[in-house]
Amino acid sequence: MFKKFSSSLMIFAVVISLIVLSETESTALDCGGCGQLTCEWYLENEGWAYGSYEAAENDIDDDGVLNEDDECEDTPVGETVDPSNGCSIKQLVPCEGPRESAKSWRNNGKYVSALAKALKRFVSQGLITKKEIRAFMKGKASSGCGKYAFTNTALYSTTMPQNNDETDIYYPVPVNNVRASRKFPVALFLQGGRVSKNYYSKFAEELAKYGFIVVVPNHDADFILTDPDYPGIEITFKGFFPENQQIPDVLDFMSAENNNATSPLYGIVNNEILVLTGHSFGSAVIIDAIQETCEFPLCRPEDSTFTLPEEVKAVALTGINTIPFGNPFDTENRPTDNPVPMAIINGDLDENAEYHDTKDSYKLIENLPKSLVFVKGANHYGLCDENNPGNPNFPAEPQNDGTPTPQENPPTLDQDISIENNCPLDSPVPSRPCFK
Image (cartoon, rainbow, N blue to C red):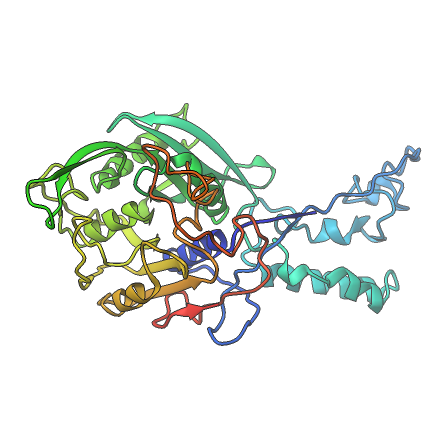
């Protein structure tokens, strides 16, 4: 049984984890043309085949190894075991992480290497054949084992006292629910204009598996802009619109959660590392924030100032280019003086951040490292749980009031399609676009 994810989610999460956690290693399959970065992942639910049987009292799992010599006393029925310890291959090399460790596999390559060594020992003892090895190894290099730092996540919802934002927080759960020996960096996700946090749940859960505490707030706003093409005409914007003040607010909130003994995050927050992620309007806010430009309405109220916290280590954005840079009516393609690593992951069908404009914008990102990825067949909402959030029947039905601007053309890549191809990058933050 395989769990499916959209390619936008996978690529976005991979790029974030690699540009932020420099020690992260990645074992990849080469699809050619763009180097190496794994984007094709499947989570396999390897259900055990339990049977009905009566075990001997001195061999509780009936595997032929007496309890006093059995290091794995819960071996599923029918699995071949090493007679020296009573453990099967799946018990010696579990998908979740190295045996007798609370940590996960560092990457898929480490898992596959350990699995191959265990299988070789079984062959040398005559327990399995080489043909059985090939069958066992099939698909393991593209499985979820070792692809995620954590296979389990949890969610809790709260209200941030700093700004009264209703907030969802996704965080990793270590193997066997043992509290982690290390703390987790924070990823703040700033939503697209009028897009509720509820439409980013799959992405946030996915990112948390890489070892991030993912904070997704709903930030209400009410501001007025003047269209330069029609002087004197004011346009009111109401709904969910992020701003850069949320960045220090979240740092303060996470620090408090880390010290709050009643919080699920008590003692596990690494508040020294913050990665900024965003979609559409939220991405524009982040571009403004990292340059400390403080242009209204990305920085509010008007005539404010903003200083980027030193905890911000990298940004990864989607549904954006440097048009608009400040006021959404501004169509100038401006340079971006990025003080931290910057990645843009867009759909090639995005009608807001169009393909050619995005390529031109990417050239104007001034500092390395930087990265650009186009997801073939995805549009502006490739990162969301559904296309055209709040307007699922558009264009057959008109846009609903107070909802995000829908895309005219539907994506050719289904939101929930499983990944069939890799879209690799030749480094965590390459200087050329990868188009798959």
